[in-house]
Length: 477
Image (cartoon, rainbow, N blue to C red):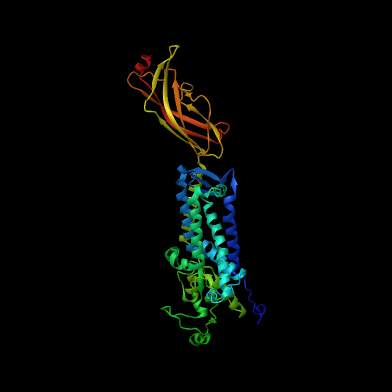
């Protein structure tokens, strides 16, 4: 009987939706390192130049206090995703899964025909045939080329493409870089071609963490035992392999025991067995059962739902529950903190240290006395272009213009990424404080700025100016 007569419309397969997402993620990851705004990348952690680029803003390594917040957002996002949708990250975003789909479904199946059908992932190709051996070698060669591209792409988030390809001209001087690319590529070849989904099952720690995060409302691929019947007993031992045996035990059982949901599973599990750590929520089993049951005019026995709704049948799945809201709140709070801290980025770095000698006192030709305080300014230009810098002193109220910079007298140039040391001398030629008992420490503010960019590239630093006792001033020679 046709699907129209039965009134069952088979929706677009989850597999196809995953392919669209894989394509979007792949293109984004490949293209993003090439996009710059004013020379800044969306994300770049450069150990070579000691820079962090985040959202097209450049930060110095001294501002790496932002990284913990990025890591918290990443882990909380994955954990929150798991609470809501199980291992949906594994099935829909994880590079391991994406790479396996590219190799198995695209290269081996669609391009070379080494595998006969995408829907049968259990049956490995017959390698006794010479034709298949040649195809296998070709598949490995094609994937090897892609593995090197993936390795290079990974490093572009640490060494930007403009530097990466410049280093290609002198590989002997950048052996660590090229060794890393080769190492990543070799690992990907072994992982995707030989280790396969065993990485998800035995290596990846996430499968062990997920069981702690699940609750009865977590959405995952589930087999409806109330409709399909119990294929496995309480000890997870298989009871039935044929539909007639199943229906003899449970007449209302709808499972056809076709095992389409089993043969399509990339991690080689039987979803009818219940929750298993190996399940990556790719939903291929949902697609398989939807197709089979749709031909019979019935709804799929395997659905993307929760224990609360399918197994326990207590009601509808609750998505906005306290645990989910807590994760969402934490993500919002950390994102706001990250945004606030990132918005306070200084466009130059400046450290001020006074020299060991507190001051020097000298009588000038006109019989006035000049008090000098010397400082060591350590400045770093964090922009992407050479800039000229200068300083000014902001003394306390009532002393305006009485403390001035006498060295340097002109603006100086600082190149990006290199610390510039300048000896700065502040002088006072008037009697600032007439104290016969002790020296006076006067609080001041140093304003440092890039000439022509005073509205943007400017920082303020608190410091002090030490004025000597009155007797020292009067006895100056």
